[in-house]
Length: 177
Image (cartoon, rainbow, N blue to C red; front, side, top):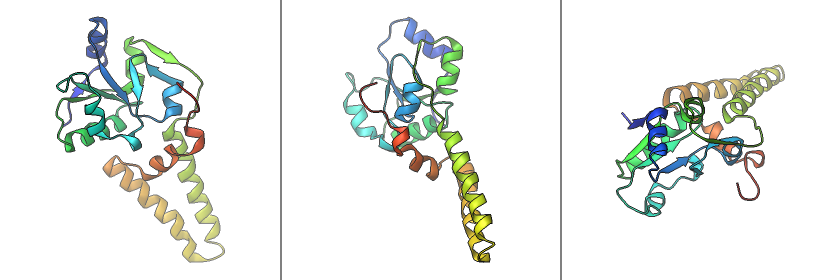
């Protein structure tokens, strides 16, 4: 099981003035919408654990990973662990729980969450597949493929469609955050 830190524990570290390495692994657009003040954005699809560890002032310094609610954070902790780094913690409940716990956050422009984008895209592809199946019965395979992808995403907690959507232009932020 991955190392986990609760938002109240993280708040306590912030209030003590501890120097924290908090990496937010959401898309730049999600990060711009709301993020913990001391977090820096490194999207999950661009995360290089070895590079991130090299940027630390102290190599033994703990790394805290955060996302919206915890799922992508767990994936990032797993990536660090597989790269041989054990002093990495996922923030339980993500940015949502941190804001509720009273951690200082920066709020910006509202964006559509990646999870919502995946639901819209998957539902649209299923409907298109059903519609196309009236032209040729084998085209129902599109809907079956999307359904299988959703089952895989649920079992592995890894969403290929989410990774693709994260790279779309509307999920990028121009300029400095």
